[in-house]
Length: 149
Image 1 (spheres, rainbow, N blue to C red):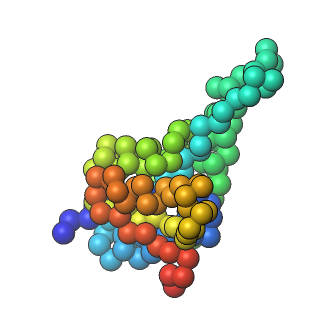
Image 2: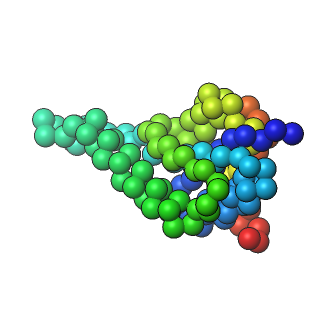
Image 3: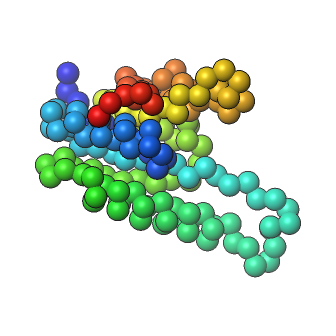
């Protein structure tokens, strides 16, 4: 199996960090590159916020820039020499963008964390990991909350 690129969706949670560390181990073993992806959920703008002084484009750009800074700092702190990591931040829908970028970049594997919600919490909030597993263009490794590093 030729694993050149591993996509790691990253939401700054402990679960995403755990998945990133697992992906680092795999990338080091397989001489792969990591693509760390953070999707800033597209904000909905209530009518009272939409005024002459509010610019949604500038607001989204500032959200993207802040996430890029945080993700880059994280990679600098915990990355490993010899494992190339690219950081990408987009504004959109996490599930759809993870699958879209996975297909565009022809990733061989997606490694992502799962918050492990069950029952009503999952029904109410949905599960990005579950939807990605069902629709991803490649295999998906879901790292649960009890996974050890």
